Amino acid sequence: MQSANETAPHRLPAKRDQDTPVTLLYIRSDHDSHDVLDAGLATIVGRYAPLVVLIPVSPDEVEPQFARWAERTPTVLVVRDGKVVGEAIGAFLPVRELDRVVRCAVEWTR
Image (cartoon, rainbow, N blue to C red; front, top):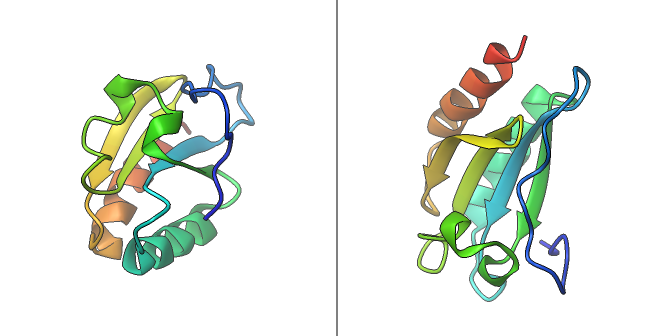
């Protein structure tokens, strides 16, 4: 997956308006393969589109507090209204666990 920004640290998305989706900030290293998580995230984004947007970034593109585990294992931060409201950590997360975290964020915004 390509990174969102190659030069500046990524900040959490700003507060959303009524039409702005929940953001999945996918923090992962470019040198490791995360096919299982990539496939799971594709399923989740497809399931909740257009309410969910996926932004892949590398650990060095985010501020340190957002990349605390991502140096060792991929991390997905679920962001709503500029705040982290969920977190999924690990390369082999089952789709049902990703779904639960994202569904809570999506349904709570309605």
